[in-house]
Amino acid sequence: MSLVGAWTDHAPAFNLKHMYKKQFAIIKKVLGINNIVSIRFSDTKTAKFKKYKDTVCTALVRSLKSKIPTYIDRLVGQLCSGGNYFLGITHSSKKEICDVYVKDEHVFQNNSVCHKFLGYLPKYPAVAMKKYILITPLTKETKPPHVILLLATPAQVGRILGLCVFKNYKLLYILPAGPTCVSLFTSLTTNGVHLNFIDYYDRHRQCVKGGVSAFNDEEMIVALPYKLFNGIIECVEKSPHGSFEPDLKPAKVSRL
Image 1 (cartoon, rainbow, N blue to C red):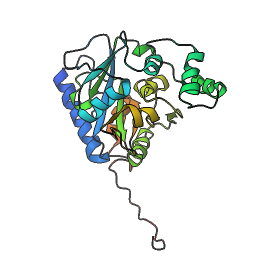
Image 2 (cartoon, rainbow, N blue to C red):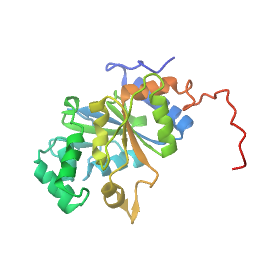
Image 3 (cartoon, rainbow, N blue to C red):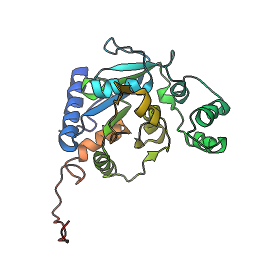
Image 4 (cartoon, rainbow, N blue to C red):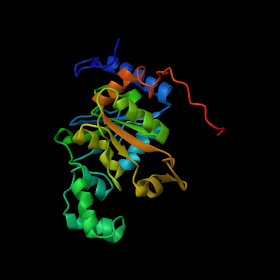
């Protein structure tokens, strides 16, 4: 039975959880990816979601690496002013944002460059204007996700992107110097794949324990709407980026 279109908002939680576990198992077996989380926007939550003193990036680490369901309360915010701005929790002027990016961090040479960056920022979508941003390991999810986040290596990313265009070719969205937190919603804004390289500060300063980053140097985030992730599962056996073996032989070349 195809997994695509198999769920509805009214499907029993047990059936959904079983399906998500099966999807996770397929991606792990075929692509070798172990860290996948569901992002869901909701005005309600259950007790399984644990509250921590967190930033968005540390909350992602908890769920991706430690398999803990956690959340961001948009009415309260989290411990990163930038994250609060990008998630539509607080509203700051372009001058305030540029003061941080240009004067404090030196991410951009001047305000002109920073303004261009701000102009390319994806808008926080209306569907995500809920109280809670719920971050759940996919194997522990019981309701339909809005977004799927995968922590992957370049080789794995290449295969994911190949699977994403099997049925419909569409370019992905990359934001140079983009913050990690926009990976929570960008794929909803663009209705496509978002590739996030994990912000330098999050990778090397914020998400660090005992002097070691929680993110490996080769890891990056791939975010996509759940519908597109669901489509990957359907075509994984049909595409050479999945498990299909084409009847092609490598050309005979000089010794490598």
